[in-house]
Image (cartoon, rainbow, N blue to C red; front, side, top):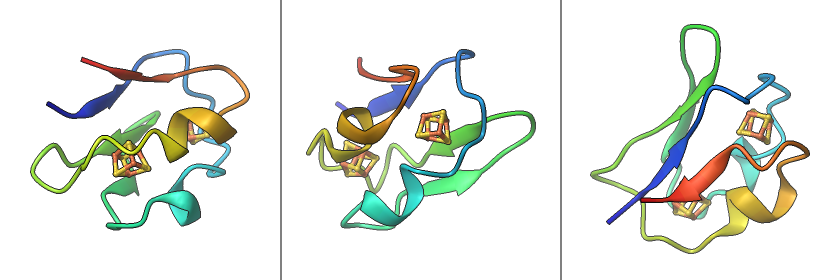
Length: 56
Ligand code: SF4
Ligand code: SF4
């Protein structure tokens, strides 16, 4: 299980500093979550203005 950022991401960067395990980085056109690091805390989803991170 891991959160995944969908294509609604506007690359605002708000989620990156909220992640306790530093799993979020800027990708090509959107931010991405490292599924190996994500602990499903939901902090990224809580701050995202467009609800792009979702639990898979
Ligand atoms: Fe990081 Fe939590 Fe979002 Fe996973 S759910 S990417 S651990 S902030
Ligand atoms: Fe993308 Fe939402 Fe993260 Fe902003 S907070 S970079 S829109 S996933």
